[in-house]
Amino acid sequence: MDLTLETREADGKTVVAVGGEIDVYTAPKLRDKITELVGEGVYDLVIDLSAVEFLDSTGLGVLVGGLKKVRAHDGSLMLVCNQDRLLKIFRITGLAKVFVIHDDAASALASA
Picture (cartoon, rainbow, N blue to C red):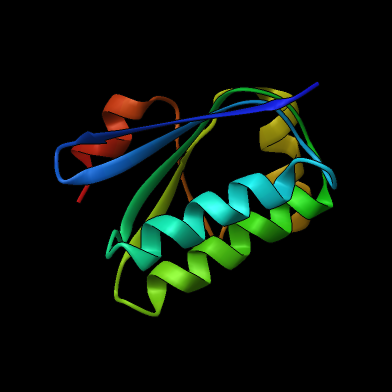
């Protein structure tokens, strides 16, 4: 399974819609996209995981790394995740307390 990334601007934030599997093989693609956006001066990101079918520890590491990158510029990285199996991973790892996780992109964009 491959990883798809689709980027769009909305309400002053950049939404990265991720689809497929985020694993040891595909995670670098997501990391590179986040690095590229931060390099372009984009510090408010919404990572939409609605279409993600699988997420492993490498993917979690990329998300944590992305959060550190935007926070270094007083930015934010919010997640959109409404799948119980992925939310369970964030709860078990304690990352549910680290990330702001929304049910849908609209609520993520509406938050400050």
